[in-house]
Length: 308
Image 1: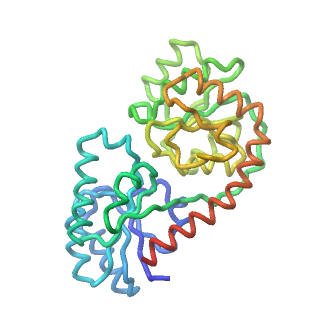
Image 2: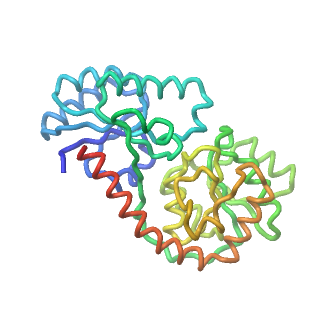
Image 3: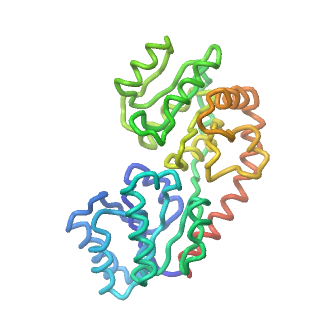
């Protein structure tokens, strides 16, 4: 396999990234000069023959310009979904990356999102990739009639309040949240909803602490920014309701249990929550079977991307 360095800005999910790639370096969304220089030093000291950049970072052209002097292949992985292109900035960033590929400044681009891949697969150098998560089942605490809703209440892509509304429709259950802001607390108070709130920013550690007492989780987003948290939830033995743009479970036996057809239909989200609660053991059993093939597919696609 080629000798590579993966550079990612997603510091809050380092464990997930390291589940998929051996050599990783984490930087800020707007990299400092010392970080760019560190990338160059890592390339030189380890004789890396390629650098894989994960997603767009401010100053991407500067990084690519410096790396081009090191005689390495430069590749990029795009992890955002089609919904994010609603933003002018996000679309502009993607178009810049596509232009870099066409001008052979970037050797290859891999998309994690099926829709993005289908849209751009006709362009030479575009391919598909899948990430996985290798955490172990916690086998832990007794559920406390909680349903976890995860995402960001200030970001429309999280579909946050539709999911909270769906929990309201499940009798006898309260919310499990992380870092609920003022608007979320006000919303829950207005509808007389009980909730448990971890007063911490979202990270792998806080996510796992939050879910261990949940009966099921919900991450029905308009985008798939929480995709690896979804796998972590299932790995810990807790089913998760997901949106119809999910990277997982399409055309599998799990689809009928956990994938909603309409992301903003609170009645359907609520029904899937109840389905997950009633069929928890069966769902996790099915998941454990399909996860083995998913992991094989993930490894094959990653290796193919690295070796191309």
